[in-house]
Image (cartoon, rainbow, N blue to C red; front, top):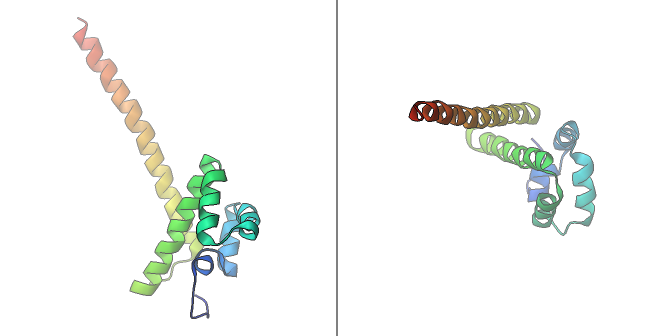
Amino acid sequence: MCERLYKNDYHVFFGYDELEELWEAINLWHVIKDYLEIADGFVSLFFQLLEKLPQQQLLTFVLTLWCIWKRRKDKLCSDVDTSPHVSVHMAHETLLQWQEYCANKGRNEEEEMNISGSFSHE
């Protein structure tokens, strides 16, 4: 993964070329880079981005952080090394499926209410 022995939060989530490329690929590096210059550390950066990002970028940011963390955990605990791009792609697909499920669930519940309501008015 990388050759440094000590890895702080910054390094784990942003500190090497492969991750910078990942953040660029999902169009968030320019935002993160601006906040990195003014943030007082990782926690400050995290909360500033949580407050400032629009909802869709916020979902992408949080999901990507989770993917990076999970990828690192899998590498350290199970010696499974997945490309960050693959990890994030799979997570985004899962998010899209979950959002579609939630949208369909709401429609299905509404349809059920309309159907049961039509029987009760006879």
